[in-house]
View 1 (tube, rainbow, N blue to C red):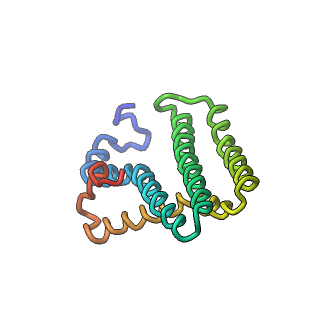
View 2 (cartoon, rainbow, N blue to C red):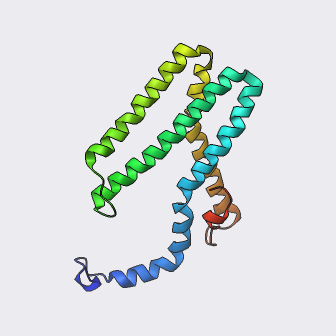
View 3 (cartoon, rainbow, N blue to C red):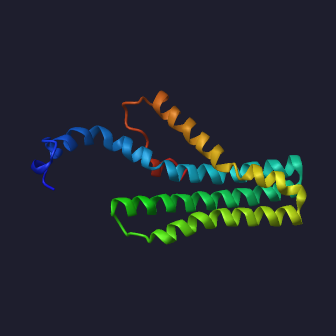
Length: 170
């Protein structure tokens, strides 16, 4: 749709030009949040698994590692499901069938329940570690929030945020 055909009467080209020079660096920074969260998840999983092994023993560390693995896969599938749903709603990109989106959404919970059952029956001592490992995305999102706060406060909200691809946490 040409800018002059906009029903609101505003010229979209002028609006985009006025916003894009300031918003582009911030958009680039925030669009890298998912990749930084993934990086935080990996760092937290490795660090906390080593700490769990040292403090609680190998079975709890095994449960924690399995919980982290399930949480990471669940996070990845959730991102893909949300992206697929957004593409389907906006008709942008490669449309995915709705049945596939719903099936993957439900499969996540089936796999989570199956893993919890196997761990409960095989290694009951590692069940607490599994449940703590499933909370890995919460810790990673908290790390991302602290990082974004650091960038906003110490580097200035109006300055260009750092390039997420060059931050080393991707």
